[in-house]
Amino acid sequence: MIKAIIGFVKYNKEKGMTIKSYIYAAFFRMCILALKKQKLEKMLGERGQESSFEETEENYKIAKIVARHVNRVANHTPWESKCLVRAMTAQKLLKEKKIHTTLYLGVGKNEEGGMRAHAWLRCGSYFVTGGGESGCATVAKFRK
Image (cartoon, rainbow, N blue to C red; front, side, top):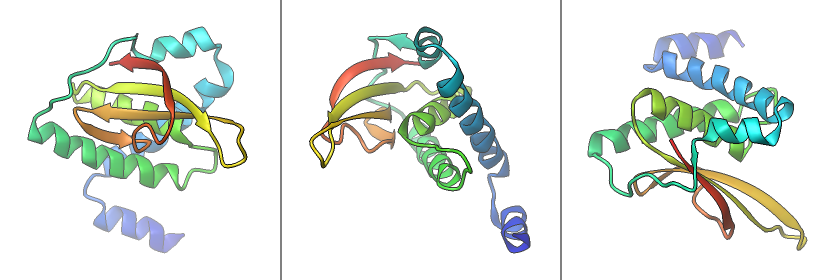
């Protein structure tokens, strides 16, 4: 544990983003568990709208940094931080940088033939979280 803390302080050049990722992931996980669907949906952005499929190189660089931090943090939270938590966290971090995104909600079939839900976030043509549609039909999209 001490080695991890020392490594974080010494080698992490974007400590603030890592800490924000952790805090936002916790906040959005609580929101998913506690809020009604309508309130949660309002947090996602403008329903039915999409952001531009083109972005600047600088915004793509920022989106890739955000993706790295969100996925790294989400893999180490003591709570469940699956696709919707990751997408909402990355969306919030990019919104703070005034970068527009589209969050998608979709459904597909799992290996057993049952239904599964999936969420992913797109910035320009880059999928920040969730790896794109992954065989899912888009049910809703939200621009922020």
